[in-house]
Amino acid sequence: MQLPPHWEKLATTYFLHHNVVALAQDLLGKIIVTNINEQLTAARIVETEAYQGITDKACHAYGNRRTKRTEIMYAAGGVAYVYLCYGIHYLFNVVTNHANHPEAVLIRAAEPIIGEAIMQARCQHKGLPTQGPGKLSKALGITQALNGFSLQSNTIFIASDGYTYPANSIKSSPRIGVAYAKEDALLPYRFFVCNNKYVSGKQ
Image (tube, rainbow, N blue to C red; front, side, top):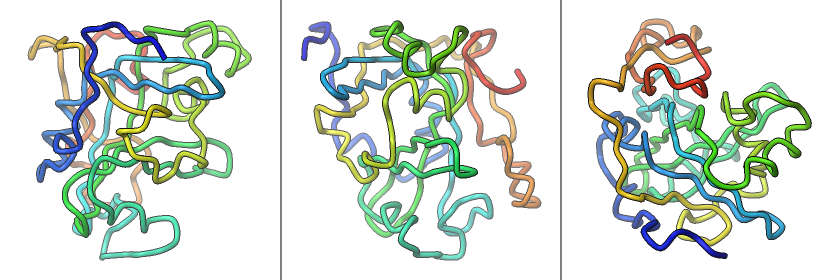
């Protein structure tokens, strides 16, 4: 697998950050890399959402809920949490914080860097293949088979090339599709890069 020499895989310690909201913002500009069936794809993250563990009504682990699906959220940060949404779309989340602090960042959208033609073929349509969390996973070849994978693997990981978006280009808003969370649905835990065409929700 050949990557640009200035790209560095994020260390496990990066994902152990105790503040998932800060981490969700910091992940903007980082690069998701997948190597699925020897097909290399990479995309720069432009939209995220933070899910703040057992006190967050929008989080799958709210109330210390431990199920077969959520168990991976209780692992130490730096692994993938992939689940099926509405029986249709796989959604890719980054588990954060230390073990038994079930927090995660949903990656909602990213801008293709490597393998855009592969992404388009996987999505089987024209347009923006990585705009929205379901399309993003499909474009990058992410399925539930990657649930629990270490983000230190060569199959899926997150890298940095040193690039950061200007602070004034990053905005926050309430998360999308979590009306069931009542007052927590209003928390400004969604972060996105302004005027980026790959951002999936309202800007």
